[in-house]
Image (tube, one colour):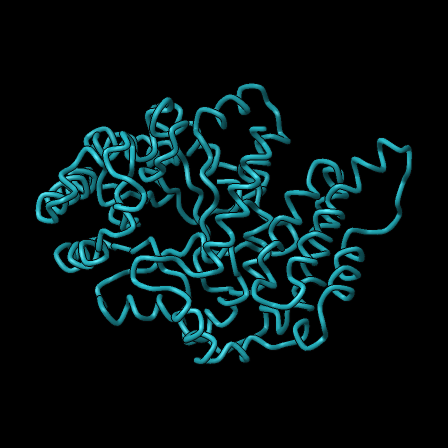
Length: 401
């Protein structure tokens, strides 16, 4: 949550035109409330896509456990006469283990224990969309209520969940996060990382050929996406989350490597070109909503763009400074006429050398992929993901301080 918003997805679409993009999870009750209040800005904040170019194939991810609210939210997505968004599917999140979601909210990963309810919820979503939108489900392999020490029992529980949900005739597409959801602290994070669960998702894909099963969890590079397909050709896809947020440019060859698409008419040729085109998106958003409302969100998408490069931290600090300018100028009674796009390019020029800024995606060679592979072992995440997680923890601590 709070990462794959419309700004981040707009940036990703500049890198890859074929990858299926997922929104951050939007809670159905919050969306229903804003619809009731008729707050167009808030509704757009939850649902809008980048307006400078088509977002292409993308999925809106909803969270909730009330069929009425999920149905209303789905109707809002499917029946937008103003053309403000154009999602290709709606996803029900049954995998988020956050205490606010799976605890007090009683949805997310808590729904893994209620497969019959999930079947009914997806039916409500499908009917809410006037039976026009495909409905998919993102889930875990189980929760810490399950017998996680016995792979056979864990797999049996997973099969029951998938089979029950699919029996409703609405869902045939599942994204399975190959980790147990820790709801009651019966399983430590260290234990969860050491469990070798990927094979359970592979088995699920093989034994349910009538369903589309995608794997999620611990996949940190294009190399590892390829590796998953080699291990299990029956997989329909591989979902990448934290690694993409932590180091998006390492996926700049996704169209060529994963989709065998060598056409380059819509994707950028360098990170400098990405900053130029993304800057136009930021200027458009600020002109529409105001810099104070959107700038920090828009610049957040660029935080990991130069991961691993010299002075990347310096560039992130410069982005933070640019993000704080609107409030500071308002407080000091100043008005800056410099577009944010120019400030971004100026910061990049000062912090990073031309070799980095103008390097082509093709320079992400097999050796680069091998470098990412060597940075992790079977039970660890890549350096990029570890550093991203540490930054995220620091941000959360600041917010709660």
